[in-house]
Length: 256
Image (cartoon, rainbow, N blue to C red; front, side, top):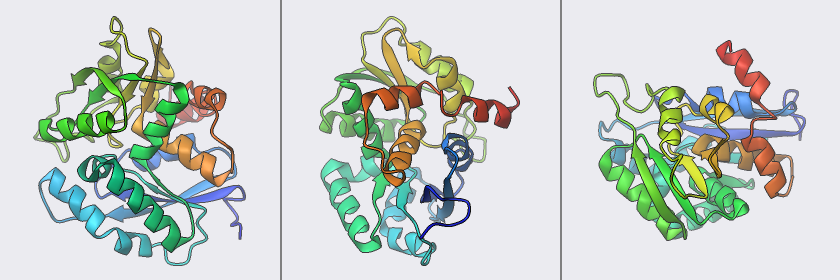
């Protein structure tokens, strides 16, 4: 069944409770005919990693908030959950949710892995806004998925804000990516779904020979591909990563 504003597909997005980036960046990336509706994941825990575990423990409850909306896919808009459970348990979770809901379940971690493999990337550079402990879990996850870590840039955050990661700017992400100018990596991944990245990628889709990706960019690309039933291809990924499909919408959103 198709709904009025989503004749090509409807995505149910699961977003961390205070995240201010997921919904705006999704709205920019979605092509005409594809729409998204959102459910917020909630946890009372103050510590980030405890919240991530809580999100997974209550995932069924969050998904139930969509009721019987005719979703064509579900998208888990947090990468930290993938780091917490690892690749094998993530794959099991994806299979379980897909079977129960009857619609493909796309995690951010798997979306990034799919994009990196589509590019043939072996050595990657990471730009991390995470606290040190989660950054280390992130490195372990990408290594488990078969990628060599060719460098890490840690972005500083302010602890006196409503959320350290969500108050980072796209300019900070861009500066982190540019630190890989003289490093030999196949791709640069701007980590986290809370750090704004689309403006950074629009300005620098490549740094040297490395393609610049972000967690949100990859999740958008993967989810759109699922609901529009477009098989993933290197050429379409590079087009999407280059911003051809969404640059104009980004400019309208940020007034550039």
